[in-house]
Length: 321
Picture 1 (cartoon, rainbow, N blue to C red):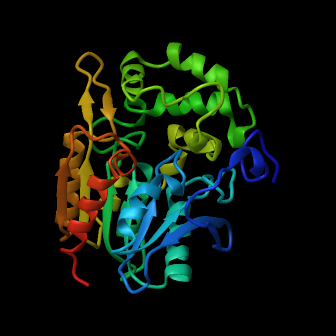
Picture 2 (cartoon, rainbow, N blue to C red; picture 1 turned 120 degrees about the vertical axis):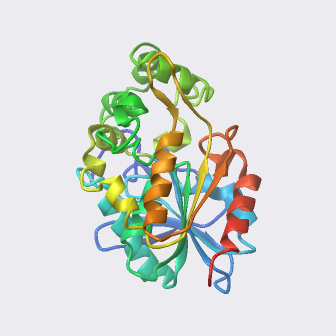
């Protein structure tokens, strides 16, 4: 498959080397790229990155976890070195990719840990994976409800990050077919709702200089369009999903704030939405352990891998083997 500036068709321009070797697993539809470390004698851990993040976003945390777990960090379809699948970026497809990966590569129960949209996929696995495949699930600052177009409670995609996703998709295009990086940077300053622009600015100059950051190069911007339009989650109602959770859950909640003037949520998920998630999961008979880190950035496993690994390790010890 051909494409634009970046992607698996142009590896020299797209990828860089990392500390852990990379491998490929064929699901039947896609080739999933992954890295692994740690002993198979230890509990298995599946790390699921956020939208716009490749497996190596976990690299620092992997070094801290490898003595206690056998760690598998994956690139989802459309990210990193994994296959691009135009028109097929849905939570159901991504969740089923990981079901095949766990069944065919890991071949034993795992703790599924995901950040952001990866956290929503961890929630999908905790509800819909085959019985016995998961021991538990860690939702790291996951946008439950807030990444839906019309959620059961609180702000939806258009009141959170949706306009930013629309800009990325417009200026970069499916499979980087547009690739107008300077245009995206200009539009960010003029075309976003003010509260959203302030929230993104508080994250620092994450867009970098004249070239995209490495994580953007490894990311198919069609993902952004699929989430902004709602097609990615159209078949996955979050309330119904959470009411079907079958394993214990850890949720870590990072920086979040509701802008008083616009009502727009800055951050991944509101307090109201976390409470509703807790009610649904405990109503399904499952533990819901909540940790709040209000000063933590969204990608806690990257900005504070010590805190992330300690939180995960301590919680995992409370799970039944």
